[in-house]
Amino acid sequence: MRGTCHCGRVAWTLNTPPKSATACNCTLCSRYGVLWAYGYIGHDIHTTGETTGYRRADGGSIDFHFCPTCGCLSHYVATSAGNDGRHWTAVNLRLTDPERMAALPIRHFDGLDSFDDLPSDGRTVKDMWF
Image 1 (tube, one colour):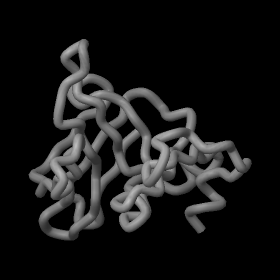
Image 2 (cartoon, helix red, strand yellow):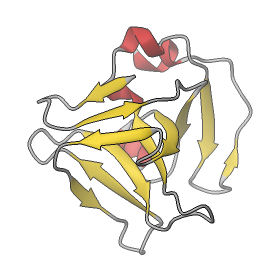
Image 3 (cartoon, one colour):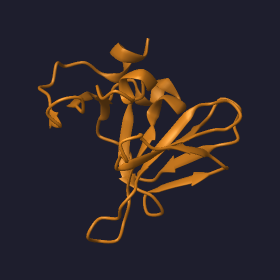
């Protein structure tokens, strides 16, 4: 699976097809309008192209990556490696073909208050994309 920014200068590949797409309501994700799929940078997620990074003013635990030309948010990478030495990463599924993602169930994550998964409401990517 592959996603690209609008101008095509930044791309990601995800070697493991996602089973769901995550919609987060934190102060950043809700503004970006992203749908995330997860993996590890350099393992099942690979990126190409030069990006500009953003980390929350409070220090944050992830770096968001954008195309410096068209401004699309392509992915984020955890600032610290896990115990296995890998960095948790998410790719923005909105940068890929909508039809390939349409049937994926939406997983809702409360990144604003509780940091808990929220109950499923039965929606799919198609319900949130169009």
